[in-house]
Image (cartoon, rainbow, N blue to C red):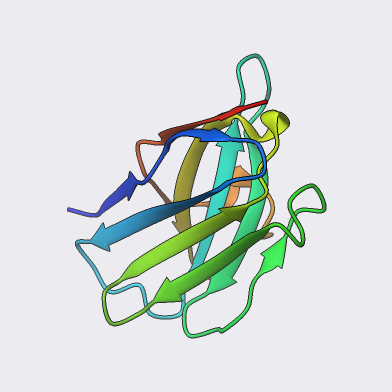
Length: 124
């Protein structure tokens, strides 16, 4: 059974930092794309960042570029999202997700596996 489990969410002050993690189990994810999405109350789920298994750098949404960093530890089958200088508008439930090689990277509908989500609240 495939499982993605997020951790690291919580309350952070604007301008601080927070690191989210996502641990995967249940199958081999070699070659998969790993992403973070977020969903704020009353809004649609939106793309945050994505990295491919084995890559050393990712692709980011413009809203977080330069502030957030996505990374993977393939030996531990874990991905991370380092959130630096978060803003109140970054407040949302953050989800990790994984997909194969087909379909666009930015559309949540193309992702096969999802975590349960972790709440991030940024105070001003």
